[in-house]
Amino acid sequence: MAGAALAVGPAGSVQKTPVGPLTAALDIGGTKIAGGLVDTDGTLLHQLQVPTPADGDRHELMAAVDHVLDDLARLPAWQHVRALGIGSAGPVDIAAGTVSPVNLPGWRSFPLRSEAAEHPAVRDLPVVLGGDAVAMTAAEHWRGAARPYRNALCLVVSTGVGAGLVLDGCLHSGPTGNAGHLGHITVDLNGRPCPCGSRGCLEGLASGTAIARTAAELGWQPGPDGSTTADAIATAALAGDPLALGAYDLAARALAAGIAAAATLVELDVAVIGGGVAKAGPVLFDPLTRYLASYATLAFTRGLRVLPAQLGTDAGLVGAAALARPALPAHR
Image (cartoon, rainbow, N blue to C red):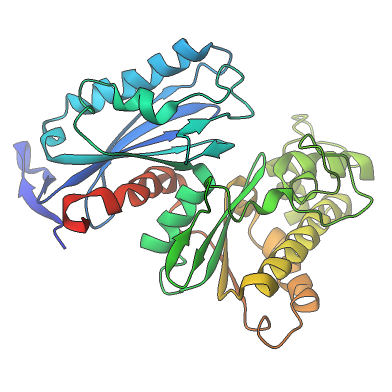
């Protein structure tokens, strides 16, 4: 497998000179559109980003994507690019090549894969599309916490809850790219109505937005700065605030129920949790581990491990590149 060689640049700086093919990567979310170049070892060599024009129409949104591709194509290393991988907020449909991100109303059934393929620097390259949670799963299995395991569930717990599956050593995205979408399984039969049309969804109990709502319902009051985010509640929980702890306890219990159900269905070795809510550390992971022991009780689920994700903010771009790895010349 080709990697990257070290070279001494101007003023003694150490730079990586790509050896072998590179993959261009896009990570498209509600607040930013990031781009990067990733080598065959999963190292992110270059990265840049622009704000997402979230209220823009389809043309403004695509213009922002094209701007990132323009900047990437100006890099000298672009000559080594042999594929483009895209991880996008969803829902996505990888069969149709379309995206309909909930927080980007200008894109509904937008043909992102074909539109990106029309960029002058991309026209001769294979373009591979996937959802952002599936991309994170691919990244953590390639270079992160799920790397040693053949069967993994990887979750992004942030404003929403997304997830992806690795089964028998292979990414399992399903026909439309939405397999493993744990955020919209019901974990509370009489729970809150969900914008998806169901009720009691995991996302409605465990996301950062849900944690803030639960804390408010329990009577939690923000500190002097007035912040009611999940981060602020986590800080209060770490300081021992019982209402803040209660909000995270409910989120952890919902996550444990969802993870245990997935493990029972497909037999998992590990659940890897990333996203902003995971930054709460023991406030989330301690009750999650405790509840998981009471939900994952069958012999083949008891050994399930729960680990924090390792790649942080790089996961989106590394994961988008991972989605496109099979399209590289060496993998054909």
